[in-house]
Length: 176
Image (cartoon, rainbow, N blue to C red; front, side):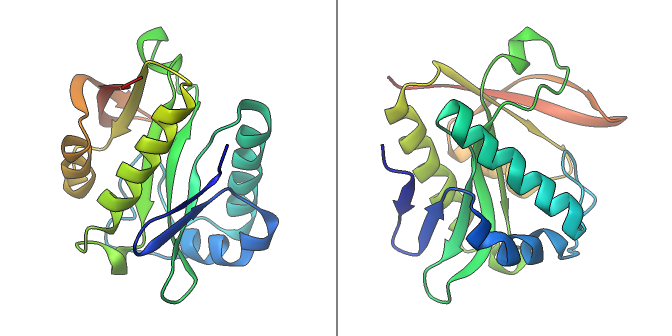
């Protein structure tokens, strides 16, 4: 099972200690969309370290997880996309399925990079035959993520609150 995905512009790699500095810088950046949920940023170095370890654990225990997105042009960490179990308390209809997640550096947005990365991660995930369904949770103010969800075949099936903030719940059937 390959855990590096290459696209024309990107490398999607498993989380590793070698990528910690770039990962910490990525999560430490304050951006105009920093206040959208479910993961508010910036994260300090301790929180970025914990997040990196969480996803190394995902890969180790489950054989899948999010990928760190690297720009092939300058070898910079510019995002994170993939799948994880977050157990957010949204009930069996949500929490029992892998949750798709994505975040791309603000300076790289609007260039199709997020869609390229998310689509590539979905193709990889479907090839692994982990689950027949995936879910996602998006802040309704995050219009860029809402567009990506629609482009990648997600459909809204519910809305709820997460940490006292409104969120929309999405699902996508996996083509197996």
